[in-house]
Amino acid sequence: MPALANKSYFNYGGQGPLPQPSLKAITTSWERIQELGPFTNNVWPFAAKEIDCTRNQLGAICGVKKDRIAFTENVTSGCVLPLWGLPVSDGDRILISDCEHPGVVSACKEFARRKNLLIDVLPVQHLHKGVENTLINNKNLLEDLDSALKPKTRLVVLSHLLWNTGKIMPISAIAEMLKRHKNKPFLLVDAAQSFGQLPIEEAASKADIYAFTGHKWACGPEGLGGVVLSKRVLDESSPTLIGWKSLKNEGSIYDNPSSPFHSDARRFEVATTCIPLLAGLRCSLNLLEKEGSVSQRLQKIQVLSAHLWHELSQIDGVQPILKGPPDAGLISFSTTSQSSLSKIVKVLGQQNIWIRLLEDPKWLRACVHITSTKSEVNNLIGTLKQIITDL
Image 1 (cartoon, rainbow, N blue to C red):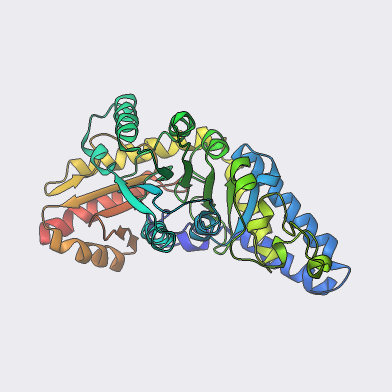
Image 2 (image 1 turned 120 degrees about the horizontal axis):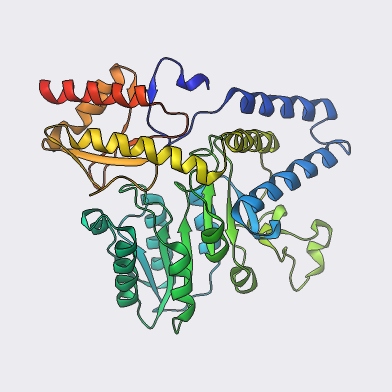
């Protein structure tokens, strides 16, 4: 990974570095397309094979058939395009957690404004202050969710892995609860931090909208993601941003067909996409698989993140956000001097140690992956101790 040379990188939750073989796969695909001719009869079988192969691979990872997967550019488009197609009525309600990414929150607020919906907030941030026992925390969350659901709640929005606290949400159990609710709300899941890091089959197959990206924990190229859609969404929703990819047949569009759109997830795809990115993502996913199953990889990540969490908790003036070791690779923390957080990030960067400053809540966040090493973590800890001392 060229991006990991001469630096300690802890920003996988923002963007994962692209492996050299994945970069080569992208350029090789691009060269092949140019050899065939970018718009010739010879290129279409090649492009179709690339699309089908990638959709099959993503379906296997998500535990669903390929016809439930639509390609997107990123998580936000994967959330927004199907969101706008959901059947809602004036006065319906959206229940969204207080730990969602600004992109999803703003989309839900605009959707509510245009459709005359009401938004309720489900508190989940407080879970980082709760007991360390995951089963108890999940029980508390489900009880809070049950209390927060109202007769007209039509949509619940929650991340699989919270991008700020690092807690894993029990998506499968939440999906089952919503099915028992009188109004059977749709479940939209932001999977930005889970795809490539956690086992996701159960969550992805049970959510109504499960949007992910390839450029974070999967270490694929930016500009390519996907969304898993439930049969219910495909049966009841309408396509939103319309383009030729949404259509079953371009040639019959003037014939006023009753349903011109694909019946599967492709109805939420729009137009021309970058075919070479598919090869890059598949290569990155294959490289991850060579490091072990997703469960085995997560165990490695948890060992290193627990080490980082423990070392952070030993530094005077530093407070890890979670009460116990992280569920996965996201570790957020703060300091007694909130005004110094941006300076800490800047000074670390000057020494080629890269973490992130979150704005809401205002915390520092470091991410470890299977490519991270204990020596890099120790380098971060040692440097952070010195910076805190000098402040």
